[in-house]
Amino acid sequence: MLMETVVLKSDDLSYAAEVILSGGLVAVPTDTVYGLAGNALDADAVAKIYDVKNRPPEKAVILLVPGLDVAHKVCAGIPESAMALAEAFWPGALTLVLPGRDTVPEIVTAGGSTIGVRCPDHPKTLELLRLTGVPLAAPSANISGMPSPKTAEEVLGYFDGRIECIIDGGRCGLGFESTIVDLTVEPFRIVRPGAVPEEDILHALNVSPAPHPSDHSK
Image (cartoon, rainbow, N blue to C red; front, side, top):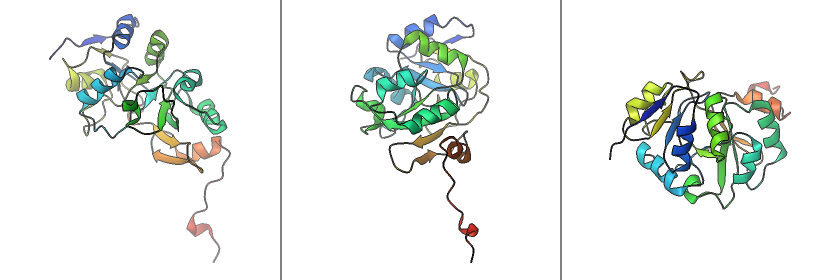
């Protein structure tokens, strides 16, 4: 059923917060691309994200949080490595994969035991997180398999009449996705290369890069 999709251009995000807290969906700007956000603690809201995006159910969704204080509410443990990376790159384009709490709906993790969390570097989305007080499930605001949107107009092209609200925060500065780092394995693993280079992650963790085969003397 089609609905009116409200595009918010002002800094008053009270309507967007009401939509989130009532189980609806809001497209949000971030420093990378626009995300399609719903209350991560509301399984029905997250199910709407999968439905609207036509997202495969086996793909987990990343959660947006305002900082490690809220990450503690959805993650069962936050190691020192995660704290170091959050201090270095949050708010920013780095997603940390950590052990999840069982209070998080199973649909968020696609049946897995881990959760990806990120603090986005965009004032409007940080304000929405503050207003709602909940983590936001927020994969990219596109139809699965289509290009990730960098503007509110591109989001509207995908979801006009299918979501309640779009927060217009201008063009996303980076235009491509965050780097995803899995900290539940030792050594850590980069699941998805993105805006934060591997060498910057190694530097923040005070880890030396693995030697390249050509570095060995013959």
